[in-house]
Image (cartoon, rainbow, N blue to C red; front, side, top):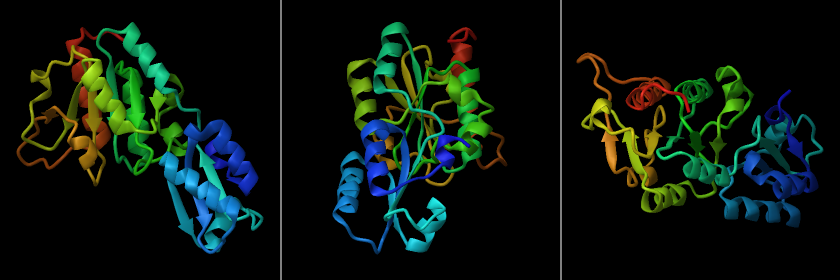
Amino acid sequence: MTPQDVPIYGTHPVEELLAARMRDVEHIYFDKDKKSQPLFNLLRICRRERLSYNLVPGAKLDALAGTPKHQGVVAFCSSRPYNDVEDLTAIIQKKPAPLFVVAASIEDPGNMGAIIRSCVCLGTDALLLERKNTVPLNATVARASAGMAEHLCIVKPRNLEGLISGYVNNNGFTAAGAEMGGGLTPARYDFTKPTILIIGGEHRGIPPYLQKLCQQRLSIPMAPNAQSLNASVAAGVLMYECMRQRGGGGR
C-alpha cells in the first residue's frame, strides 16, 4: 500500500503528522459531532494553513479509519513527498527559461496522472498544485502516471496565488492560461521565455483567483464541430508546443 492508502488517525498521531509532514497532507476528516480541545486545535491548524478538510458523520469516519478508535480525526497523505518551494528556486537559478505547469481544479485522477506523464515526457520543469479543489496525489494518480510522478518536481505551495504573482513580478515569468476559445494560438505564443502555464479543471476551468493572474490566454485550434479537449490532452498539446519551440530538447 502507498502512504496515501493508509489512514493516520487519532489526535496525537495527526498532530505529529502535521508537525513533521504538513506539506504532504492531502485531506483531513473530522467527526462533525465530536468536540474536544485537541480536535479544535487541529481544526484551527487546518484553517490557518489552508489544508483541505471536511466534517463528516462518525460512521463515515469509522469507514475511513477502518476502526471506531479514531478519536474523531483521520488524515491522508500523498503517495510521495511533495517538493519544496526552494526546489523551484533552484530550477529558476539553473535554467534561463523554465516552464512551470499549474494543474488547477483537476478532479479526475486519470487526467492528473496523464498530465504528470506528459510533464515528464515533454520536458516540463515542475508541476504546481492547489491545496484544495484538486485531486490528491494518491495511489490512483501514481498508477495513471505510469510511475512518472517519481521523476517530476511537484509542489503544493501554501499560497499558490502569491507564489505565481511573485514569479511574474520578480522573476520575469508570464502566466498563460488555457481556455476554450478567443485566445492566442499556441504557435503564436513565445514559449521560449519563462512561462507558468495554467490548465483548468474538467468542470470548473481555471478558478477566478488564477484567471486574474493570466497575462495571456491560449486556445488550441479545433475542428468546427468539436466542443472541447480533455484537460490532460490540452495540457499535452501546449507542453509539446513549448518543447517544439525550444528545439525539441529535454530538460
